[in-house]
Image (cartoon, rainbow, N blue to C red; front, top):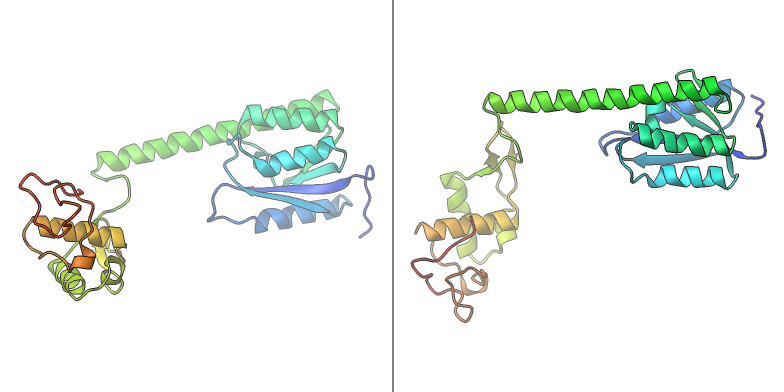
Length: 250
């Protein structure tokens, strides 16, 4: 397809997702198709993984700098909320595009004539909608969390639930001279929520062993395993029995 430009400046697309679990493939395809329908070919993509309300937007800043420098003259986005979900952020972008006469297109059918009052009005109204949608998402998320907690749910990462078999395994492993990491390498410990299990980290194995030791259910580990940095165990004798009031990591 024959392409055209309004100037010698490049045509760019801004792609944004909020989390690393998302990708920009759909946005990229939508922008390319929209540009082709309008007779453009996208020369440069600015891609970022960040909340639309964040003030730390390196790729958006790079795009705006290129607009200011006269490098970019047309900008495509899949939807206007990919630019920002904050009205103040959207207005900042508007000021730059308007001042440097850059065209803005969205893949869902809008072409903003930012030099005209109507184009500026439409951009502003849709930006308000984007911020409103973000506020609704936050409110619904908060309501969902409140209901979950009210029904007995617990927030935060699930804790490890050690079984007697797990305890026996790490005690035997440490007594045989294995490191904390090696002791947890071939077991899966249940989690406090759901049916999932997880390989314990070295710090978790060490913490559990100290708990068992404090309860008198595990012997002192071999000498090279005893530098615990635990209050109550003298530095010059890390394997000495702790004092009665010794405190161990919770």
